[in-house]
Each structure stands twice: as C-alpha cells, then as structure tokens.
Length: 282
Image 1 (tube, rainbow, N blue to C red):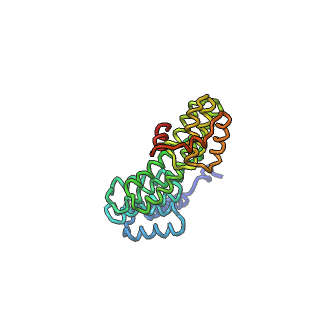
Image 2 (tube, one colour; image 1 turned 45 degrees about the vertical axis):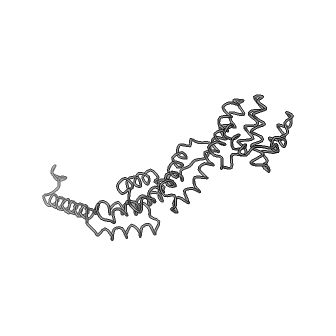
Image 3 (cartoon, helix red, strand yellow; image 1 turned 60 degrees about the horizontal axis):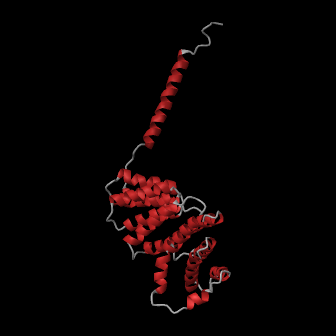
C-alpha cells in the first residue's frame, strides 16, 4: 500500500470544502435571522403583553426593551419602559425593576404614570423586607420610598396603599428596636435598653409595639432604682392602654415598690398634662 493512501483524495478535499461552505452559509443565514428586524412599536408591545399573560416575565421584559431599542422616541417606548420595570418586579429582579423605574422618572418626571413609577420603587423595597433579626437597611429604604409616594401623591390610590404598607413597615422597624432593647435588658445594659424603648414610643407610637415598650421602660427604670421615672411611664401606659396586659404587669411591678398607679392616673390634671408628660419623657 502506498504511503500516500491515507491522505484524502482531491475529490474528498473538494467535498469537504463544499461542506464547510454550506455550513458557513447556514451559520450566516442564522445570524441574519437573528439580526435587527424593525417592527411596528405597537406590535412588539402587544407581543410583550401576550408574554405577560402567559406569566413569562423575562421574555416580556425583553420585548418591552426591544420597543425602546427600535422606537426610542415613540409613545410606546415610554409605556414599555414602565412595563419593563413591572415585568422585572414580577420576575423578582428587584434591582433591575428599581433602576428602570428610576430611569423612567428621570426621563419623564411630569408623566401621568410617574406616580406608579414611585410606587413601583416602593413595593420593590417593601417586598424585600427581612425578619427583625436581620439588617434593616431595606426596610428603611422601603419606608423612605413609601413616604415619598404619600408626600407626592397624597390623594392617589397608590398613596392609600402606601399608608397601609408604611404602618406595617413601622411595626417592623419598631420590632427591630424592641428586639435590640430586650437584648440589652437581659445583659443588664439598662441605659442602652432605655434608649431603644424610648425610640419605639417616640418614633413608632402607632405600632403594636408601643405598649410593651412602655412596660419595658418601667422595668428598666425599676432595675436602676429610678422609681419616680418608672411611675410616670407606668401612668402613661395606664392612661393610654388601661386594659393592656403590659399595664397589668407594670402595675404589679410598681405595687411591689409601694406605687399605686390608680392614684397616679386618677389625680386631677390640668388640660394637656398627658401630652406634656409624653413630650418630657420621650
């Protein structure tokens, strides 16, 4: 056998070259099929809506972005930007959703859809609120964003919902303060605990944490022997929450030190006394 018998024949070389050309052509055709093909903005927008109806948020977002890419100055591009932010929110891509909504507000601050842009930013932060045992930076960001919705558009439906979410956000932040305050109390770091409990009463008065915060203040003051201050805080607790279990606990605790909170609460007072007392204490 010739030593050249394993080498490809001229025919094989030609055939291989032809095959390469065909594959190359196929690759070129595929690239061309993926290339930019201009379509009407409304058509792409409606295709994106169809994807949203199917729950395909990622593809919907890509199509909304395509509207912007192909028709950046069209009214559909403006709508698509906000819809893209919404699709990202539904896909739980909060960072992208916030960034897109902020970009929309920056470009179209006077748009009728701007209130929704602010609201979308707020609920992105709100949905990321963690439990009270973790860092609350996201909760603080949610609070600020929700307050902005209420401040800018106080009579809107978005503001009404934002107010409800703000209450829950405040309760969450108050819970964090309470958690830290209880820890300090167990460690006998009473002054640090007092600071946390006072923050709850002063900044989150309308939350569900306030009653316990007042009782924990009574506990803290009793622990460091400041009975007069404990008595005043206990009387504020009894005046505002007479049926509270926390008041019953404070009542019993102070009774052991010869303090009758009934006498404190029922004393004749000048008008505005309780308001002035709260301002003094907190």
